[in-house]
Length: 427
Image (tube, rainbow, N blue to C red):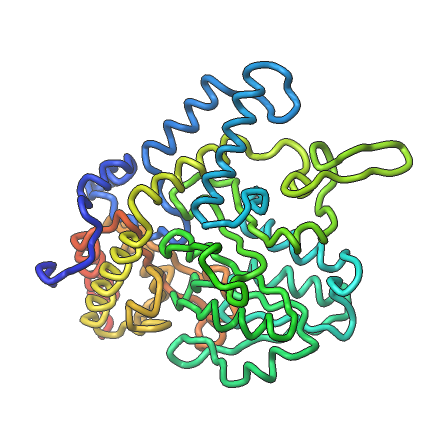
């Protein structure tokens, strides 16, 4: 393969890679690390690591309750992180940003509180919730639990043979009975980029709430909620910190103020209250109503540094890099006999995660041989078993690039994949 015609790679890629200390690792056998598992978790730049260490070394204290200088500093850092995340999403109101422990908790928060809500907002018997066949389990199971517990009906969009949402029956699926439409912005298994505006507009026409899982979108697509027309703007967007070069243990739920103010608390405890007596409690306003107990303080501070890093690079440039390197990987995979790609084969229609099969070799064996050659990928169902069942497979191998991935690493991956074929004597 040749890299001479690649366009769109991140400017100063060699310099960017130096920001990520782990990328300089040498693995067993003296092989350099080729990290192609960023859809699972991204690597962290030094600025995120340093920011978190600095907070722990110099400012560590609980927030909003310690009446001393360290407490004030810690609170200020935590709330500054909220401001940074709001800017990252283009959120109209910083108080619409709620910190959770991950995207899964954020989705469960919404699903549970919709069961407890009052009035027309409550999901109950006779209502319908619409999801898709390509969802991560985190955007399937909470809605299954909601409908099972309330008597509502769960429905879903299917997936076409080329990995796109099948919208041919959109008017049959999204109807006056629909209360919630929940879908992924970018599929973690198929890589598909879904039509957020079209789906949101249709859902809003029937008065449904739209919940978007942006866990795979936030790392690689520019998001500007305030710039979206009201009809096209989802009501809830969630993502997780560890996929946007931030730490684990921190997630984000953005929701429209008008929706969040109608939802009851999800968890009870400290900080989410206005007053407490032995008879009853009243609750704080948003966002604190949904942040019970001591939050992930240093993780939020680290996430703030992470989104600052991405904004400084420019999400438009990150997206261009992802599209270029993904196109290069798709080209390389097309040269390997016996490879079947699951999902779109046009880089412009997908994110950086590419799931594939190699004829005659189990995905776990593929991943193990690649690992022996220093190439880190993921094998399994990627928490998307229904999507795998749709394509008649139990598991797949998934490579996923990111802003620090080089063409040379893709070359090493393709070389290792050919070596895997030779090792198992297939084809």
